[in-house]
Amino acid sequence: MKRILVTGGAGFIGSHLCERLLNEGNEVICLDNYFTGSKMNVVHLMDNPYFELVRHDVTHTYMAEVDEIYNLACPASPVHYQYNPIKTIKTSVMGAINMLGLAKRVRAKILQASTSEVYGDPHVHPQPESYWGNVNPIGIRSCYDEGKRCAETLFMDYHLQNNVKIKIIRIFNTYGPRMNPDDGRVVSNFIVQALKGQDITIFGDGQQTRSFQYVDDLVEGMCRMMGSREDFVGPVNIGNPNEFTMLELAQNVLELTGSKSKLIYQTLPQDDPKQRQPNIDLAYQELNGWQPKVQLREGLMKTIEYFDRQLKG
Ligand code: NAD
Ligand code: UDP
Image (cartoon, rainbow, N blue to C red; front, side, top):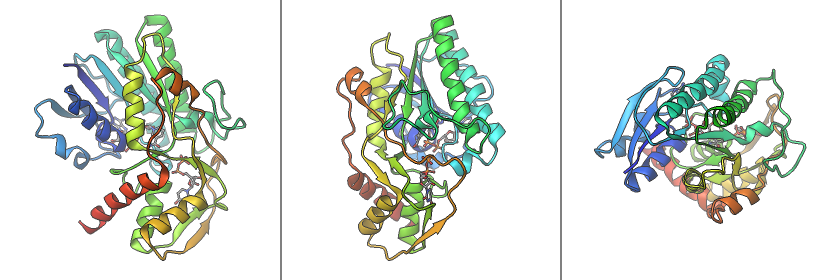
């Protein structure tokens, strides 16, 4: 039995990961400050004696004897990470330093949840891991993008300088049950708006693209990456290459919910990337043929069912 620390474990992705790791017979310590996550996301795990929930902020040091660390603590939606940008960058940078320090001390393997945002508004499409990106260092997304880029640097330096066993994954837009309904990300926004019969808010002309991954595929990729051969540290893209415009996404949500909501157009936020699509050849090669299994409409149906229950309940 391994003891595994999941920072940001009470968040959307973290809660699915904790569940999976417990199901595989591990002991899990879930650490969270509940900024965007919630105890409700993990309440169903509380009865498990191998699950431990700790209120803690990763900008402060934390000590526990663990075998593996998944470092997910960081607000992920633009609305939330822009709420307190200084705190966001502290969470990424000081959180990485604190968790890498812990990994070094107890000789744990540590995985960083990095992001496709390190590619910024990309000039190379689709994005391979070798692309260095096009990121504005002083814009409204920078606290998140540059924080995550700096965290990748720290991971690589602890690995090269101190032999810490690291893994870096770059996650592309991921959605599914337990997303925070108010967190402003496009999939949760469109579904909640459609279910409530409110206008669907398209930012800009809706022609910008994203490639949406269902959360189960991501969790599978994360676990495979943690278990991959020791000299493969990444970064590796984990995402679904099927690319959609925001108008296509809205159309799918309207069809699947049967909603009569109308589309309204709002200003495109500053530095909003125009396109995003992962090249997943490396993940396929190194992670035992990993590739996403759940396509958009199937994943949207499961997410719509979840939000429908939440709104009624
Ligand atoms: P989320 O907001 O649901 O989860 C983040 C969790 O971290 C929350 O539970 C929050 O309370 C916690 N947290 C934030 N600051 C903290 C701090 N200082 N100390 C302790 N806990 C803190 O978002 P998510 O979508 O589940 O994202 C999880 C991770 O995956 C994040 O690191 C995010 O950057 C990364 N990621 C997500 C996506 C995506 O599309 N969902 C894409 C790329 C990267
Ligand atoms: N978006 C939108 N309407 C919304 C929320 C977001 O059109 O109500 C757009 C947003 O401008 C961006 C895309 O959807 O182009 C994805 O936004 P999200 O915040 O989900 O993720 P990110 O921009 O970080 O990829």
